[in-house]
Image (cartoon, rainbow, N blue to C red; front, top):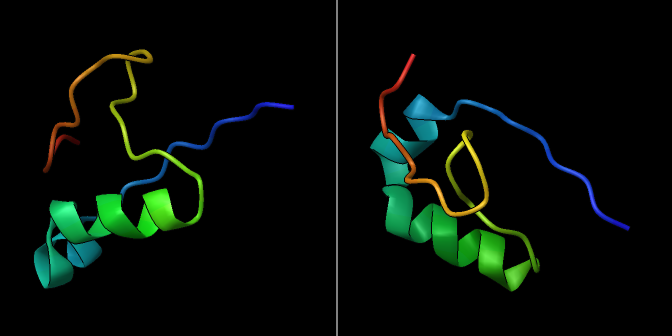
Length: 47
């Protein structure tokens, strides 16, 4: 089964940084990635 959720986390990025968010996601078998496709770049601060 596969699903996706797009959420903005600017305060979390500011507090711990994207690298830490990515690490936390990987520990939970999730991926932090861009919203325009599987191999898209993550744009920090994009509104």
